[in-house]
Every structure is written in structure tokens, then in C-alpha cells.
Figure 1 (tube, rainbow, N blue to C red):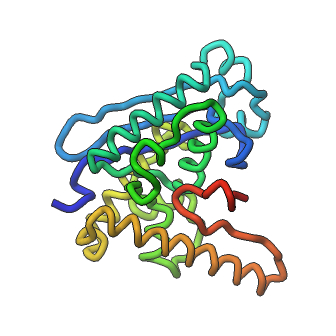
Figure 2: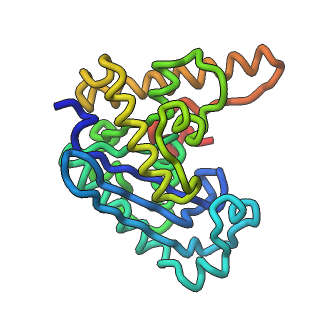
Length: 238
């Protein structure tokens, strides 16, 4: 059986911003799907302990007041999220996250911030990770396709419904469905074992970052694009 036909741990977070070093988790979802078994859905509303900027609220709809009144303490929520993901990875279930570099790095920093044992330390190190990132995979197998590569655009391209964008549970499920569609459509992907697919994505993500940097240089833009995937090491984090 190919990896896309087995169990998948779909993961997504919404945050206070886009800086993985300083921004905080506001909502999170983990949905265990596929493999011919019922879906297991888990969701968290988190009190991040800081103000949620208006710009972030405009995206995901969560205000500081709502998070403080109804959210779980961050350290408790992060512990539960990391534990759940680690339990599935050690059983061979991959984490599926669209633009996993952001979600998993942010989760890693939140764990360290709150004294929670990080995901990589629970599973035996980064080499034990199993991640499928539809953002990276799509760019690799259809690299010359024009247009945006947002989750919404990629879902539209692969005829995957996304009815509540920027809600963590909806985005997580959409990422899993895109991953399934990629495995279904692309023979060379479904023939790969999960560990091999994970290793391939490390190289693809780095190559994609280098290519984008070269494009920016040609356009006169001096911007660095992070190539580490799926978790940016602390020593080189942007």
C-alpha cells in the first residue's frame, strides 16, 4: 500500500504573525485521516500570552480578548499537540502540513519557549521525522506552472474543496486531501517509501529556496530564502 493510502496526521496552526522565532500559536488542528478508518479530529484554541495583532485577527478571526477568555494555557496546548504528533510519527504516520517549514518550526519554538520537550527530541532526532508537505511536493512535480502557490490556489488546481480558509482544521484537512491527490496522480511519488519521500523533500525545499533567491537577485532584490526543511535549526533560523 502506498503512503497516501495509509493514515495521515494532518496538521495546521494559525498564529500571531509570520515570524517563527517570536510569534505564537493561536489555534491548532491535528486530524488523523485516511487508511480506511474514521477521522480523529483534535483542535485547540490557545491563549498565546501576548496581544494578537489586528492583522492576524483579520486572517483567522481570533481576538486577544477571545483567546484570553476561552483559550487553553499555551504550555498545556503545546504539550498536547507535540505529544499527539510524536505518538503518530513513531508509529510511522507522517505529518502532513502545507508549508511545513513554518508550522513545524513555530511549534518547535513554542515547545522550547514553554519548557515542553520538542517533537524532534521525542522521536529520536530530526532523521526520524516523517513529513509530507504538499507545498514542496507540488512545486517539485509541477515547477513551471504559473500562478500562486497558496493553499487556496493549490486546492483549486487539484480540485480539493477548501470552504473555510485560515481555520486550522479546514486547512489541515485540505493539506491532507492535496497530499492524497498528489499520491494518486503521480506514480513516482506513490512508489516512494515515506522515509525516502521525506529525504527527497529536504533536497527539493533547499533547491526551491536557491532558485527563488537567484530569481530575486536577477530582479535586484537582496533577499535570503530559508532552505532548511521541515524544521529550521535554531542556529540558522531567520
